[in-house]
Amino acid sequence: MKQKSIVIEYDEYINNQGIQKEDIDLLDHAKGATKNSYAPYSKFNVGAAVRLSNGEIISASNQENAAYPSGLCAERVAIFYAHARYPEESVISLAVTASVNGAQCETPTYPCGACRQVLAESEQRGGHEIKIIIGGAKVTQIVKGTSSLLPFVFDNLPK
Image 1 (cartoon, rainbow, N blue to C red):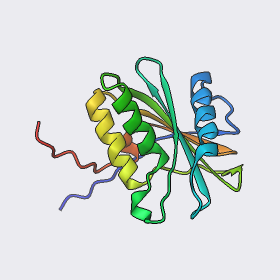
Image 2: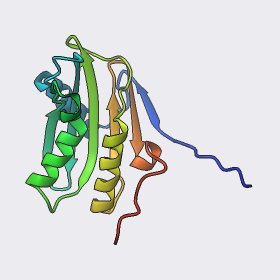
Image 3: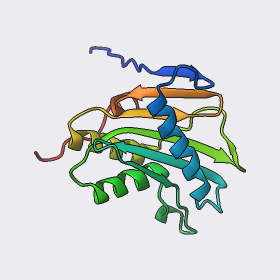
Image 4: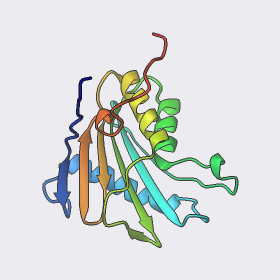
Protein backbone atom coordinates (compact mmCIF):
# COMPACT_ATOMS: atom_id res chain seq x y z
CA MET A 1 0.00 0.00 0.00
CA LYS A 2 1.10 3.51 -0.75
CA GLN A 3 -0.57 6.46 0.94
CA LYS A 4 -0.90 9.63 -1.11
CA SER A 5 -2.37 13.05 -0.49
CA ILE A 6 -3.79 15.91 -2.50
CA VAL A 7 -2.96 19.52 -1.74
CA ILE A 8 -5.41 22.16 -2.87
CA GLU A 9 -4.06 25.65 -3.31
CA TYR A 10 -6.19 28.75 -3.59
CA ASP A 11 -5.88 32.48 -3.06
CA GLU A 12 -8.15 34.10 -0.50
CA TYR A 13 -9.04 37.78 -0.45
CA ILE A 14 -10.83 39.70 2.29
CA ASN A 15 -13.27 42.37 1.05
CA ASN A 16 -11.86 41.85 -2.47
CA GLN A 17 -8.64 43.70 -1.57
CA GLY A 18 -5.91 42.85 -4.08
CA ILE A 19 -8.08 41.11 -6.68
CA GLN A 20 -7.29 42.00 -10.30
CA LYS A 21 -9.69 44.48 -11.92
CA GLU A 22 -10.78 42.02 -14.62
CA ASP A 23 -11.71 39.48 -11.94
CA ILE A 24 -13.70 42.10 -9.99
CA ASP A 25 -15.48 42.96 -13.25
CA LEU A 26 -16.39 39.31 -13.81
CA LEU A 27 -17.62 39.02 -10.21
CA ASP A 28 -19.79 42.10 -10.75
CA HIS A 29 -21.36 40.41 -13.78
CA ALA A 30 -22.05 37.32 -11.66
CA LYS A 31 -23.60 39.47 -8.90
CA GLY A 32 -25.84 41.14 -11.46
CA ALA A 33 -26.93 37.77 -12.77
CA THR A 34 -28.27 36.74 -9.34
CA LYS A 35 -31.10 39.22 -9.94
CA ASN A 36 -32.26 37.09 -12.90
CA SER A 37 -32.29 33.87 -10.91
CA TYR A 38 -35.51 31.89 -10.84
CA ALA A 39 -35.37 30.28 -7.40
CA PRO A 40 -38.90 30.25 -5.95
CA TYR A 41 -38.26 26.99 -4.07
CA SER A 42 -34.80 27.38 -2.53
CA LYS A 43 -34.70 31.20 -2.42
CA PHE A 44 -30.98 30.71 -3.16
CA ASN A 45 -30.01 32.96 -6.07
CA VAL A 46 -26.79 32.07 -7.86
CA GLY A 47 -25.11 34.09 -10.59
CA ALA A 48 -22.22 33.07 -12.82
CA ALA A 49 -20.19 34.91 -15.42
CA VAL A 50 -17.81 33.40 -17.96
CA ARG A 51 -15.01 35.27 -19.75
CA LEU A 52 -14.20 33.77 -23.14
CA SER A 53 -10.98 33.85 -25.15
CA ASN A 54 -12.52 36.45 -27.49
CA GLY A 55 -13.19 38.80 -24.52
CA GLU A 56 -16.95 38.17 -24.42
CA ILE A 57 -18.58 37.85 -21.02
CA ILE A 58 -21.61 35.58 -20.66
CA SER A 59 -23.70 35.93 -17.49
CA ALA A 60 -26.32 33.48 -16.27
CA SER A 61 -28.31 32.48 -13.21
CA ASN A 62 -29.75 29.35 -11.69
CA GLN A 63 -33.16 28.28 -12.97
CA GLU A 64 -35.28 26.07 -10.72
CA ASN A 65 -38.30 23.99 -11.57
CA ALA A 66 -40.95 22.25 -9.47
CA ALA A 67 -39.57 18.98 -10.88
CA TYR A 68 -36.27 19.62 -9.08
CA PRO A 69 -33.93 17.66 -11.35
CA SER A 70 -35.16 19.75 -14.27
CA GLY A 71 -33.51 22.94 -13.02
CA LEU A 72 -29.99 24.06 -13.86
CA CYS A 73 -27.20 25.72 -11.93
CA ALA A 74 -25.93 29.14 -12.99
CA GLU A 75 -22.49 27.78 -13.85
CA ARG A 76 -23.81 25.22 -16.32
CA VAL A 77 -26.25 27.68 -17.88
CA ALA A 78 -23.36 30.12 -18.48
CA ILE A 79 -20.91 27.54 -19.81
CA PHE A 80 -23.44 25.76 -22.04
CA TYR A 81 -24.67 29.05 -23.51
CA ALA A 82 -21.10 30.28 -24.04
CA HIS A 83 -20.16 27.10 -25.92
CA ALA A 84 -23.40 27.17 -27.93
CA ARG A 85 -23.00 30.84 -28.88
CA TYR A 86 -19.22 30.81 -29.39
CA PRO A 87 -18.25 27.17 -30.10
CA GLU A 88 -14.70 28.02 -31.20
CA GLU A 89 -13.84 30.07 -28.10
CA SER A 90 -12.47 28.71 -24.85
CA VAL A 91 -13.45 29.67 -21.32
CA ILE A 92 -10.72 31.73 -19.64
CA SER A 93 -12.36 32.36 -16.28
CA LEU A 94 -15.58 31.83 -14.36
CA ALA A 95 -16.96 33.87 -11.47
CA VAL A 96 -19.71 32.59 -9.18
CA THR A 97 -21.58 34.25 -6.34
CA ALA A 98 -24.83 33.66 -4.47
CA SER A 99 -27.40 35.65 -2.52
CA VAL A 100 -30.29 34.93 -0.20
CA ASN A 101 -33.14 37.42 0.16
CA GLY A 102 -31.20 39.93 -1.93
CA ALA A 103 -28.08 39.86 0.28
CA GLN A 104 -24.88 38.38 -1.10
CA CYS A 105 -23.66 35.40 0.91
CA GLU A 106 -20.69 36.37 3.08
CA THR A 107 -18.55 33.36 2.18
CA PRO A 108 -17.92 31.61 -1.14
CA THR A 109 -20.52 29.23 -2.58
CA TYR A 110 -18.73 26.61 -4.64
CA PRO A 111 -20.05 24.85 -7.76
CA CYS A 112 -21.77 21.50 -7.26
CA GLY A 113 -20.23 18.27 -8.51
CA ALA A 114 -22.10 18.32 -11.82
CA CYS A 115 -20.89 21.86 -12.52
CA ARG A 116 -17.33 20.88 -11.57
CA GLN A 117 -17.43 18.07 -14.13
CA VAL A 118 -18.73 20.45 -16.81
CA LEU A 119 -15.93 22.90 -15.93
CA ALA A 120 -13.36 20.12 -16.18
CA GLU A 121 -14.57 19.12 -19.63
CA SER A 122 -14.62 22.76 -20.70
CA GLU A 123 -10.95 22.94 -19.66
CA GLN A 124 -10.16 19.83 -21.69
CA ARG A 125 -12.02 21.31 -24.64
CA GLY A 126 -10.13 24.60 -24.39
CA GLY A 127 -6.75 23.06 -23.69
CA HIS A 128 -5.97 25.15 -20.59
CA GLU A 129 -6.96 25.67 -16.97
CA ILE A 130 -9.89 27.92 -16.13
CA LYS A 131 -9.50 30.50 -13.38
CA ILE A 132 -12.41 30.04 -10.98
CA ILE A 133 -13.42 33.03 -8.85
CA ILE A 134 -15.82 32.27 -6.02
CA GLY A 135 -17.07 35.48 -4.48
CA GLY A 136 -18.66 36.18 -1.15
CA ALA A 137 -19.52 39.53 0.39
CA LYS A 138 -16.53 39.30 2.74
CA VAL A 139 -14.34 36.48 1.39
CA THR A 140 -13.45 35.66 -2.21
CA GLN A 141 -11.40 32.64 -3.19
CA ILE A 142 -9.68 32.01 -6.51
CA VAL A 143 -8.52 28.62 -7.74
CA LYS A 144 -6.51 27.96 -10.86
CA GLY A 145 -8.07 25.02 -12.61
CA THR A 146 -10.78 22.53 -11.84
CA SER A 147 -8.33 19.96 -10.48
CA SER A 148 -8.41 21.97 -7.24
CA LEU A 149 -12.19 21.52 -7.10
CA LEU A 150 -12.48 18.05 -8.57
CA PRO A 151 -9.20 16.18 -8.16
CA PHE A 152 -10.51 12.83 -9.46
CA VAL A 153 -12.26 14.09 -12.56
CA PHE A 154 -14.02 11.68 -14.92
CA ASP A 155 -11.91 11.92 -18.07
CA ASN A 156 -11.92 8.43 -19.54
CA LEU A 157 -13.60 9.61 -22.71
CA PRO A 158 -12.47 8.20 -26.06
CA LYS A 159 -9.89 10.41 -27.73
